[in-house]
Image 1 (tube, rainbow, N blue to C red):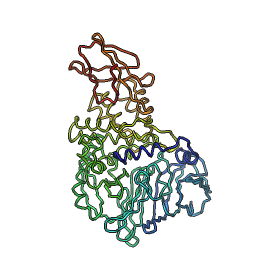
Image 2: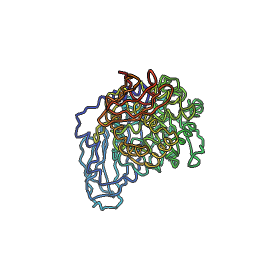
Image 3: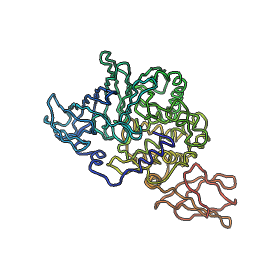
Length: 534
């Protein structure tokens, strides 16, 4: 979900979050007792989509393992969708609703270690997306030939806006079957691999064999045509499939040549694509695009940049298709490594915005990548911390994109070892493979890769909106320097140039001094600090 317009839209959206939280915020955003006692193992989402009526109906069969004794289970579904009934072992179960949360009383004794299932029957007119993907739901559109063109998007808003599920990110389902009945003459494309098509009902059955986060599940219906290729990747042969509107086939064949280039660069930096078993897909949709797992959606009008614009203002942003590169980068950071709480959304967006520069670096060099990152730095607002409040389904600042990328770039400078940095990025995707994580876990992993304690570094950059100010003065052949606008205990290595030589210093909040044989110094601009000569 990205670009200058996208960035401003998300920023406005995030700034609109009230800091007065409701019971509904807590029910949605926390691991309630009615969620904690059961572990998701499998979903079968089986629905019919009627674009003429903007109506959906069907079932979600939820398989789970009992972790602790309890008889009340929380599932989530947002009005105006209606739960028709909930069954277990063929028997109707009573439930009570509190807004989007529904509390099901189970009659069967839930014994620890057992595997059980419930079936949710539901229907209705789901929320129509106002401005997908930022304010999502169902997008009911028509293509240029007047045929239905339908898609879902729901990050932040919640997957329960269109299907009943355990709508909290901490618990990813292990695997999933997605069955969608589409109008005759149209195709549905969802996540994973196409298992079968029921020709009589025009129902498409897609199977996801890897863990998947709930907002990553999607439905895309249109007059699609398919083409594809096989990529020889780090884990073998990877199917790369593309579904586009019929009239856009030739444009897509040209523009999507960037997809295997993306895969080559990101496997180099991040390690193997995390979902070989489920293939990789680009799917055209009637909105900008999103990172739906193994079913990345695309609506960038078959041009480079972000809808033809360069977010960095450097020219490098027009060397690639923003949506192909950015949204596919989320396969590693969002879909492989997933936040437990949306308060930590910077883990998705910071790393993925940074991945754009790594794509540039792979093909155009390190200097070009640095120019791109310095270009997007001008879009940072520093309005509030990147990390939002926990347990209430609220994200942090929209700066999570541009600032998040620049924080990572700064940390790379501190490490000062490109191969070790690459190993660190690959190590993250190995250490947290198919897991949900907290910011603290990511911090600790990064901190372990360098000498010294960098907890203050992360506290400063992630949990405050203040950028360190490197203050210095030169008197009588001495350089005096310190950091201001920082938390207590903050210190950070900094690379500066003096008299044509590169020198490392480690400013703290206390004045330090160093002999200087120059009239001035130059702070390496790759470090995200402000510089003030006093």
